Amino acid sequence: MSEVILVTGASAGFGEAIARLFVSKGYRVIGAARRQDKLRDLAHELGERFYPLQMDVSDKDSVDKALALLPKDWSKISLLVNNAGLALGLDKAYEADFKDWETMIMTNVMGLSYLTRKLLPQMVAAKEGYIINIGSTAGSYPYPGGNVYGATKAFVKQFSLNLRADLAGSHVRVSTIEPGLCGGTEFSKVRFKGDADRAKQVYEGVSSLQPEDIANAVLWLFQQPKHVNVNRLELMPVSQSFGPWHLAED
Ligand SMILES: NC(=O)c1ccc[n+]([C@@H]2O[C@H](COP(=O)([O-])OP(=O)(O)OC[C@H]3O[C@@H](n4cnc5c(N)ncnc54)[C@H](OP(=O)(O)O)[C@@H]3O)[C@@H](O)[C@H]2O)c1
Image (cartoon, rainbow, N blue to C red; front, top):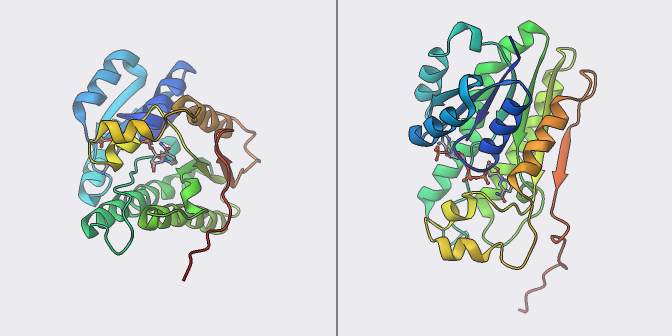
């Protein structure tokens, strides 16, 4: 039986690309997300090495119930990819919708924490396992309107580093992948609440990263020798870089 990986947010974007790549390499993949129809389509395409698991990561009961449904031969998870996440809105902090902030925190922070807390004990007991958390360059570099989204991704980075401290001697590995601009996903459409034109403009005229680039990074990390831990992996498209310090006139 091949190793099992669990990827959250498998119904679109990075998660879908990760599921496809790992199945193509002979692994078994549990793909979790809320949209059952999308997971069903993926299961149809990927066959018996893909296990669709409906869950809302922001709801602890939903996570517990979904994991309890896993058949025994799918329950030893070698790699957890905490990928489900979202940005909502791009408004200044003094104008943003507080509900959006709550949703981002519940998904990007609480969801990732639920899954991690739930699966870590079995990895520690087995003295092996790997957690790859999907952060973002937004967790290191602020931008206008990034307020709570960036803060949730800073949590992902620091939580992962602190896990490393707790897991010393356990043989369990933890990494973050921190991508910059990546097209070919639903990310901006979700951020702009379904406004496809506004979402399209984000990627116009630039070569952005693609979901397959992130999937390749996950596979590369997973296939490193077991004594190697990459703490953080930050990726940007070549077209993305840094701006000057902003000085506002008084
Ligand atoms: N695209 C970028 O430029 C970029 C850059 C840096 C980091 N990231 C991060 O990369 C991750 C994936 O982003 P993406 O670009 O692939 O976005 P995406 O295409 O919108 O995919 C997001 C996935 O997360 C799932 N999801 C959202 N809320 C969920 C919930 N409550 N419970 C379960 N699943 C949930 C969605 O599935 P359902 O809607 O079916 O639940 C979907 O499968 C996110 O954490 C994002 O913050 C993206």
